[in-house]
Each structure stands twice: as structure tokens, then as C-alpha cells.
Length: 108
DNA sequence: GTTGTGACGGGTC
DNA sequence: CGACCCGCCACAA
Image 1 (cartoon, rainbow, N blue to C red):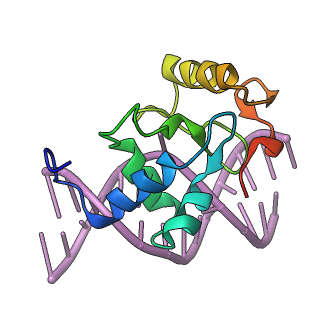
Image 2: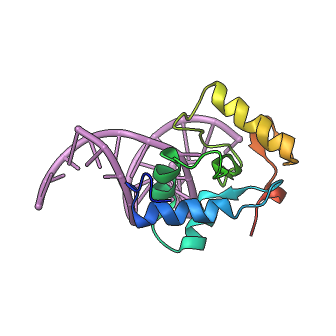
């Protein structure tokens, strides 16, 4: 735990909240903000983009409110996005359209 | 201490 | 629907 502690309290809170997301479901950045009740979706994105706890922290289960995947490992577009979609699909996340998850898969 | 950027969100056109 | 603008917080240089 104290191996690489260059992270701030905010980052730690984000990883902790994302880690609570159950498989087959997805949460929006705003949902995470509601769990930690700190910062904004923009800050959560910044934190997950540096997610050093992957894949321990299911950052791929965090998607945009629009249902779009958002990004993956700092890449807002590219083959990694397709990888993210495959993982979610494999976990049982319903997709409304390719590249977009069903709103029913959202928590909250 | 200041500036710029970013895996967002909501509102408006 | 899509495209555009503004506002939000956190982090790195």
C-alpha cells in the first residue's frame, strides 16, 4: 500500500470508489463523484487516467453519462477503446450501440 | 504562485 | 441527433 504513495487523498478516494463497482455494471464519472462527494467528473477523469492500480481498479467499468466508453489508460480513442468494450461485454454489460453501453447497466 | 491541459457534465444552437 | 460553449476540480510543468 505504501509502495508508490505519490497519490493525493482525492486520487485514493476515486480508486476506492471505482473498486466497489460490481461486474456486469458500469458507473459514470459523476457517480464516482457522488460516492466520494469531492471534486468533479473532470477531476475523476484525471485520476483514472493515471490509475496505477489497474486492473485491480476496474477503471474500464467507468464510462460517460452519454453511455460512451470515455477513455482507457489515457487514450480517448484507439484500439484500447475497443478493448474496453470487449471487457465490459465479456462481463455481461449490455451495449446499446457499438461503443456505447446501455443506460440500464448504470448503477444508481 | 501562475498557466495550461484533461478518460466530464450540462446547457444551448 | 450532432456540434459548440462554459464551468467544474485536480495535476503537472
